[in-house]
Image 1 (cartoon, rainbow, N blue to C red):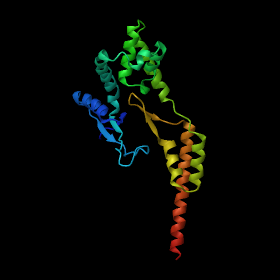
Image 2: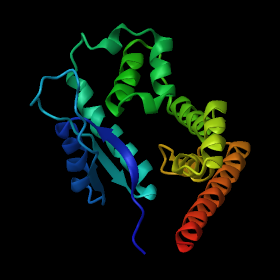
Image 3: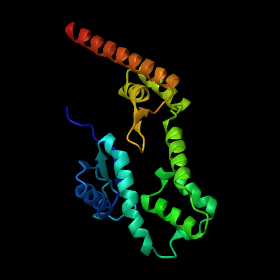
Image 4: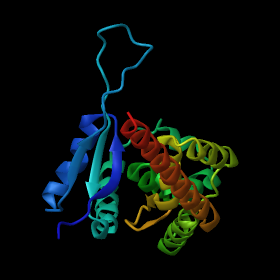
Length: 221
């Protein structure tokens, strides 16, 4: 059975994506690269360059390994960082927030935040950083409650036999998100998922009835 590759990082610049793939190649870690559909920037003039999003995918079991490799790599690059880099203006608490919210910052920023705290004589210990990581994973694991608006739209379009209702229902019922450690968890709460399943069933039934009635009417002629 072929291994499943999940999204690890997204880049809008091939140079940044290439830096990561070079690291993966050097360490013989398998990966996949995908590009998103072309997106036209309406603010650009006609004929302007189109943009692409580069998605790097890894096997779930390689996520933690690559996170460590990135940290080790960035520890070398932060030695020559410009002292005017924005993180140097952050307070100690703000630097700790960088460490607490790793998904919102690059590996470079996280390593630099620890370096700056070390220089200020207020280092973030390995135990603290590990605790921040565990708390972040726990927070990201918690499922979300679907917005009432989308539930209402789902039911309405399902009763009308539209594909939108079927799509919304399927997404609410089955959609999973990928955590920074490679784990996959359901994105929505049990209540939302039950609503999604009901919407999906209604949509499929109504659509089947609509198709059957069309076939029956056609057979009468």
